[in-house]
Length: 292
Length: 238
Image (tube, rainbow over all chains, first blue to last red; front, top):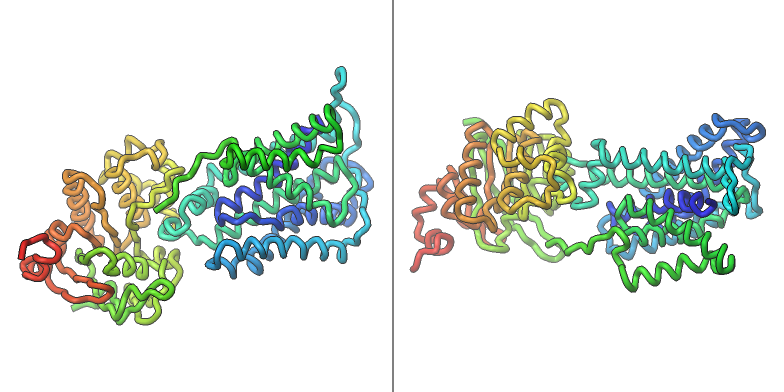
């Protein structure tokens, strides 16, 4: 069950990778750091809002909201400053910039938040709601999974049913053609970054509920693993990222349970190598023919 | 005589080190069909792409309905009433036919359903396929969708790039009839075509582009009779 909860968190982060890749063909390596900032701002927000001491659902919702807004602003800033000026540069340039932004945020995080781990406030009193044989389910795990699923359902609704979502899909498929329809492509790209960052921020808060120890380098490994999850599902494919994330969480937990927990972190990357060797388009990917 | 709807003056544009257009000037009056003919690589598509804002002009002016649009963003140009149906149709294959049409109305959300009815009346085939993904349509249907999608923005000026490319002769005929019908309803049309014969048949005036410059211009009927045009573009033996 812990695996499914982690899977939900990976899926939320993976969505940001996959959506940005969809519109820009860019792997936004700074995305893991946005997730870290999500957890950090969640920590501060919970204290400032005074909901840290008394666990309540409102407290959780407020914390989630504050952290999502903060990360939306951060992502908008990153896009404007680091990526938009490189829109017509070769694809390698923004990729290198992404790695630079990632390192910058890791180090800024250590200056601003301090390098020592912090302990995320208890926003939900943990108790087991279900126990059978070896399987136990806590209300925290259910909250994490439930919130993740609700956000993903919300995203699906936005992407499939709204004008903005339609524009995202159109820009992903053919940005110049979308521009000819009058779509302000730059604004849609900005919006995509913002939506992805909000999901990553939520993932940061949710991870604080299950693994309360947070620190400025916490985004590195989950960020990379979520990238693997996005590739697993087929990069650029939104449902693929959701399934890929959950699958990766479950596989990791099974590996650490049945083999050894030392392999927990390695398995994601073994998986990445295997996918790239045998099915580079991922589980849901269709091989795209080059557009002429 | 009233001012032209579109004026292009001394336009130069290109990609990187390549100059695709040199000193091009033309004007299009409201209600006309003007065709641009020329061989592959003459700069016809680049001219349309520059008018619609996909390519930035290096120098020269583009004025639409009294407003300077050279170098403006494509979405602003669409808002002003210029719609470009690009070469190769560029349908959003992953969106349904209905969603493709909705994308066309991106800047004209009011009266979207009324415009949709008008477009579907023009292209009844699309009505049967509204729920299908755009990528599953045949070439002719995709061309209809591409034109219909542009009409959803209720343009005053429609730029059509090779609408007959790769279509069966019967469909080519149909597409040209539709272009004429659209024009009869009051939309001004600039038509880029390799099928010069058909294009000259429905156009009122024509320009001939060669390696980035205008070499001939005049009434379509006159150009169709011009021996140089007949030799170069209408396949007449010399």
